Length: 99
Image (tube, rainbow, N blue to C red; front, top):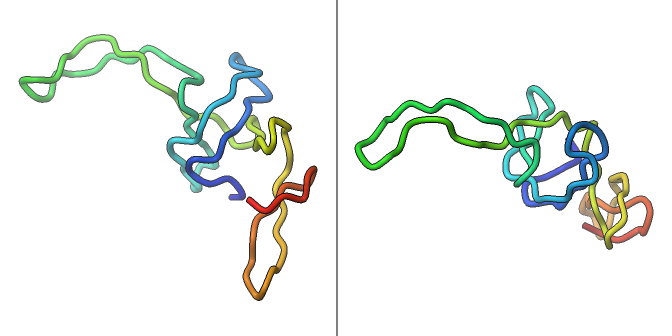
């Protein structure tokens, strides 16, 4: 997967199209990411600890990686790899900037 945790991405499809946020969690097995503040859903939560509150909570749901695009200099871009000083580095295809 070409995206990493803490990358800033823009959602390009779905109900939250156009929203921008950071990647909080990645699941490479199912190719899904959780973006901060996007794809919010209501979920019933059980009270687990005395200090925790149960009830209906609003949490972020996973989004398929094909529905997000990496942001570099406020432009959506694809990610490429190249060798630089004997190391493999990620770069933005639109700007050529090393990520």
